[in-house]
Image (cartoon, rainbow, N blue to C red):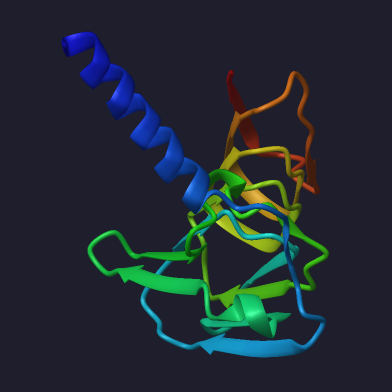
Length: 184
């Protein structure tokens, strides 16, 4: 009897999983919508599962502009953690690329006066310009590459890879103390 109950439970779970599974890639509509975020008070950015071109400019006032397909723009979420001075930008339902986004048109531009930590989880590439000061840390998880530009005393890069190779490019850090960490 217990064996029959276990089989029935597994079958119900499989049926429910099949009902809620995504059958095809989620594609962008081609119609661009613009999202803007202007709150201040953060020096850390956490980018979770966003696709598209991501550019962060340091040395300018706080501002975020996201140009994205209108059918996907409603999924973008902003969360400001004031205790940690961290702004998280994510796409609802796309944890670890679960939505299987295809042919999307997204451009994310973030400006901020200063940055100490940038966290990026996803397969998109990221460009960070204007890095200055004593310390900067990039934490990257996924297959995307990073281009870092600026002048910093101490640069720390942590890369958790999902494939067997990775590439992070840093430019114009001639005197920086650089520490690289790879987690496989």
